Length: 249
Ligand code: PGA
Image (cartoon, rainbow, N blue to C red; front, side):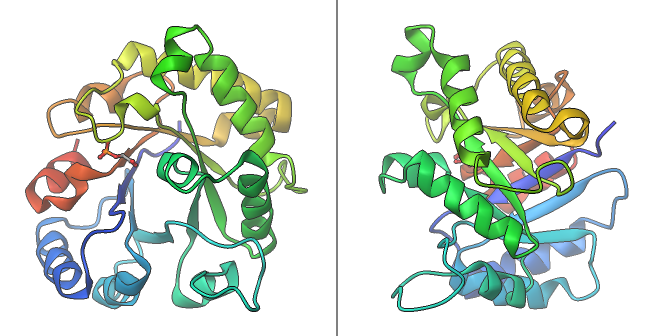
């Protein structure tokens, strides 16, 4: 049994001032819980504010939304894994659907990023998910399995090092149309099967999160669905009340 993960992906929202207010209110209403893990993925410029507001709350982890695959150098505007680690990040989102579909990130770039995250000692949370077209043509499972194989293909210690996977169907992100718990279970089973092919027993202890229009109303059913080990939440994680309700689901 994996302790459930509730992860907030703030995307390009919540600058330092809002982030500080959000964290003060969240931390005062959310005492330490040992049966679950909370993760925040703030925008880079708010990362320090969120980290500072956590103080001794080591039960809450932080991650960054994206990294470059090189460790350092002349890459204006980019963030590296060593920088993220130095700032206190434990996880890195890789291949979020907006990175893939808005910024044209390829499977091979995702693979390079996962390898850099592994090299730097952080945990990648590789995002996979099919488009509506791929779902309607019956290619949903094949798509996520391909993204998974490709994304993890450059990692060398898959058997030893923790990874997490987020299943986020593209048609469900920010659209108000979430996958049903049954759909999520089916896709998570397919992901777990593929993980077993790639990293054997490690698959059973790898967290697979569902993301896409999670809200306080659907979170309890989604987190209770078989094979769903956590929730990755965008829009609803920006509303302190909604996020608190989800984190307590
Ligand atoms: P959403 O986004 O909850 O707003 O659908 C989820 C995500 O993109 O991680």
